[in-house]
Length: 118
Image (cartoon, rainbow, N blue to C red; front, side, top):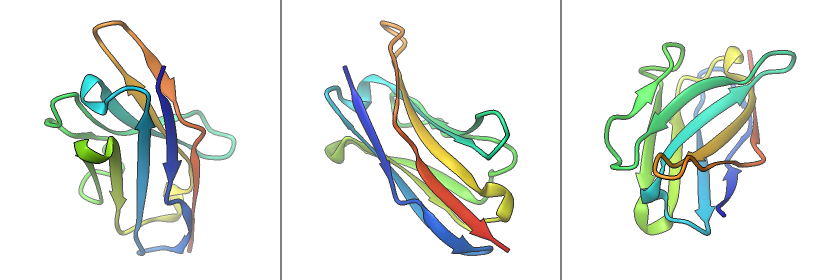
């Protein structure tokens, strides 16, 4: 079992930055692909970014590419999402997910709220 805890959310003005953290316990992040998703009020959860178990090949949704950067700190068993040039449409609850391919295990964190005001 893995437990995930997201942090770093908050309320910012458009154009500002936030850095989200996803810290794992119970299993190493090097065993898994780590994904960030977000869910705005009244909308479905959508993919934001991911980094695979090797720490390479970061991938981004078109809506955040060039503004968000995903990174991994193995020693901290954590993944980060640096979010720059935030827009009101980036508002939502941000979740990280831990996904292993070898045993098809998936776990989600409880989420952290990001609110961007115009």
